[in-house]
Image (cartoon, rainbow, N blue to C red; front, top):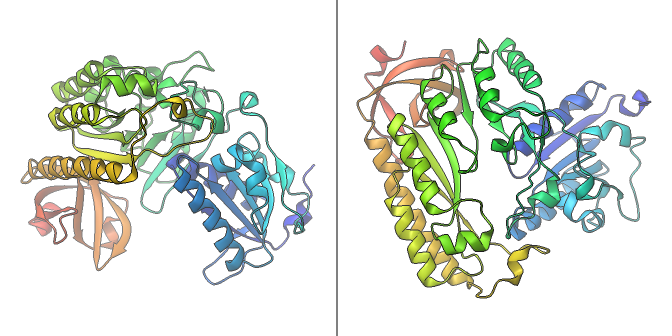
Length: 444
C-alpha cells in the first residue's frame, strides 16, 4: 500500500540520458508521481525528488551519467535522488556510491518506483540498491511520451536476445518482450484523443515484436495504421534481418506509416559483421535498401555504423567504406567503438587506436554529409506535407516532411502541430533545413 502522505506538496525533477525509449519511460515515471500529487519542478525551484534515467551504451555514456548525477545533486541540495536505467542495472553498486544517490532501481523496478519510495530521507552511506538479475527481467511496462516537439514515442518492445559481441544492452534490458497489439492500439488511440499527430514506435529490438505474445510486427503496424486521428507513424531503428519485404511493401502503401527507415548496419565488412555476431551480411543489407528504394524512391534511410571495433583492420574498414558509399541511403549515424566490460568483443585481437577511430569516423561523416545534401537537393521544388513543431528559435520554426526532410519557415503559432502542404525551396543559411518557396501561397 502506497503512503500518499510521503508525496504531499512535493516537487520532482526528471533527467533522461540516452535513447528515446528512456524518454518514454521517464515520461511514464513522471505520470506515476503526478498521480500521487507530485508536480514537476519549475525553472528556478529546488526539487524534493530527482529521477535520473541513465544510459550505458558506451564508457563515455557512463561518464556523462556520473557527471549528471553529481550536477543534479548540487542543483537540488537535499533532494532525494533516484537513479535508474541501463547504467543503474549494469553497475548498481557503483552508482549507489556516487555522492547524493539515495536509491538505485534496476530495469525491472524502474516503473514500480512508487512502491520503493517509502520515505524520502537522505542516505548517508550510499544509496539503497533494488535490482534483479538480467536473466530475471521479464515484465513489460508500457510507456508513451510526448517530446518537446510534436511527436509521441510509443514503447512497443523491450529487451534483446541477440547478444552481439560488442553490446551490453541484453544485460541492461533483459530478454526480448512486448505488450499486446490491442494495448498498443489503445495507447495510440489515447494519443489521438489528446491531439497527438505523430507517433514513433520505439523499443530495443522492435522487429522482434510479438515474441512474448505470439503476434508479429507486421500485424502490429497493420493494426496501428487503422487508428483514426494519427497523421503519421515512424518506425525507429529496426534490424535489417527483421524488416521483412512484406513490411516494406505495407509501409509503401499504408495510410499513415512514413517512408522513413532507420536500419543499423554497424559495419560494411562481412568479416567484421561476423566478429560482431550480427545476424545478416552485406548482401542482405543491400537487398533491403534496394527493396525500399524500389517501392519508395523518395524514402529517407538512416543507417547506424560503428567504426574502430576490435578486429577492424585497414582492409576491412576500406571494404566497409566502399560498401557504404555504394548504398542509396540518406544519412549515417556514426559511432566510435567503446569497449564494454563483460562483452565477447574483448577476446578479439587487433585493437584500433583512438586516432585511427577518429579518422575513420570523419571519412564516414563526410560520406554522410554528401548523401544527406544530395537527398535534400533532389526534393527542392517538390510539393510535400509538413508537420510543424512548436519550438521557436531566432524567429523560425521547423517541421518535417513524411520522408524526414527538415523544413524552416518564419514562426507562426497557428501552424504548431498542424500539417500543411508546401513547396520546398533551397537551403537555409546554415544548410540544416530547406526553406519554403512562396510561403504565403503554399502554406494554408
